[in-house]
Length: 213
Image (tube, rainbow, N blue to C red):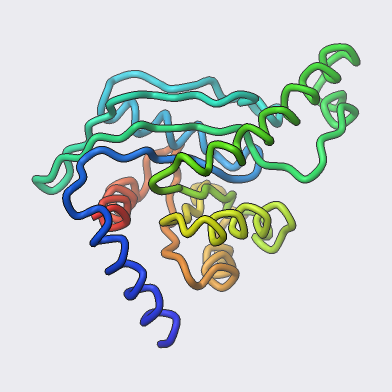
């Protein structure tokens, strides 16, 4: 009950801030391979007919900031324009040897690790420019990690409006895990989706508009 009161209080504050605005910088943050780019691609395909970035099973496929300007979303008779900012996956440790398990050669793995480390630093810097943030988590994994705590901690410190996405609900391992994400971060709304399959995307758009209304 107390959490809901606090949440509604902050929503009223954000409503006052965003009431007259129709353009927002929206950042996609989360641990590596949680589906940030897949969700950003889903949005871009829905409203622009094109994808935003490349995805891969290899961690840290996104190693630099990707931006898509003027993504106009028309939902429930309301139009908002977003600048989408897809960021590299946040990690507390990046070891080039981890990439060797995916068939990369040593030189390529070291290069990827170096770029990924730089990308994490850039991701945190870009937080200062965000109007709102979508935190994408893999619903098949434990939400109580140092990476997730680091991400949420940075967002709390900056008082940025946040919506948490429990992604990959199409996978068997996601069953029952969404409630763990809700328990881990009770101060935020959590929307379960499958960005890859498009499941619950309507609910995502509704929550997104509520976030910046």
